[in-house]
Image (cartoon, rainbow, N blue to C red; front, top):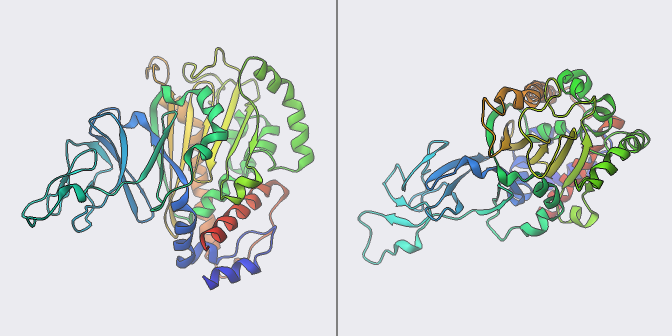
Length: 414
């Protein structure tokens, strides 16, 4: 891909990406092949499909994946493509089906992906050879991951390894969906992801987040460690160190994980940290009070926030009482979808233990604001007057994201 190579060679570190990275269809196509389709993508929670035959469809770029629970209770993933002539099979986003019946010629498939009926086929036709095409799927602590690679994907156990301790302590497997919201965004997916890599914009754009978290956290940790200047970050981490040590003394894992050099060379970009919300707040809610009952292995509210990032396309923010799953999906060159899924403990009852609006408040208003910001960014990037600007000291994680992006694009060309 000569055009990309030229752009890569001409890219100036410390600046935003050139216009073509957000507007060129060929680059977008290569990004899907070299990056997106090779990642383990968090797509939902098992509580969305509790019963045999329950399914939902995950769509990104041109791919559509059926995730369904079989009669044996096992969850599987299949490409939403009939093996006859390629029609989409499931046309609704979710539902329950005893059989998956293609609306074109009525080929029907079981929830296990086996072809059950195909009319008027030749005598030598073998149904067992025409089941649905499987998509790689793994489940960890109730979180559903898929990998869209048509070849053997990266090892899942290696991928999830550094993240297991935090997820298992919060016990997301013992949770259920409280609510979900989608935020269609008319912008290139990189602008969506870049926005989530920095909190330089948080002060002017997110008064709700800034009123819930203490100011130092927003500045130094709002987009993760090493986002702000090193001196300021060190001062904040030193300040909260007694809180970290107290958490550890109570058996609460609170270590930070930054992707290793070896992981980066493999195209990985994982992250974990745990910090206090601050301002005396016990949860990420409008008034700082708990929004639901305790989750996981916590015995008390300690006002902590855990950030677990699987890659730039998916992460979880976990408080003592609820979890927010962030799912970022590229759809086309200038259209993306952000989906947020809020989890509470599986024994929590709405109206008694929690109200959905209380649980979703902060990240709903924040993501609505982000949608506006990102769409305005895309409009500006289209201008003939656009030129890559210099990144601030509070946007170093954007440079880190670019390094990861370029590493993956180079790897994919091999």
